[in-house]
Image (cartoon, rainbow, N blue to C red):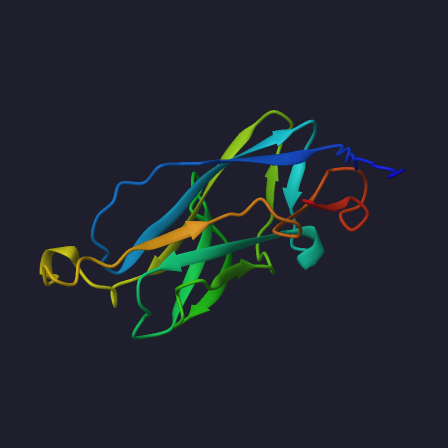
Length: 169
């Protein structure tokens, strides 16, 4: 006889992420490489400056080739243009990680409300589709937010910031 169990997780509050579609096109200078709407479900959600356990987002990247120079990504609150964090991608853009783990400014979302974030990076060392050889094709770059454990960490608004730390499982 095999005993089976299902784990259930209950959160006081959690962030719901919705991807915002971006138009495809060429990159020049600082380009928007990702936009997401975050809705606070259940209660207040905060990505805090206290420590990495209180606010972090880890994105994967998928791209063709590699970059000629190291790039850094910048995470913004879209409406206010506030810089939340920066992270280095390095030159291995394919299957790399862009980890925002030390927020310089907090992002607080009231229960039921939505805020938009965006990620920008300089991808000018990628092929420009207008100048690409037909035999090579254009380069591509994707930012991916996976539904995996420890990819998103936040504070659920219950008490002191360090007390309410939560992570996706």
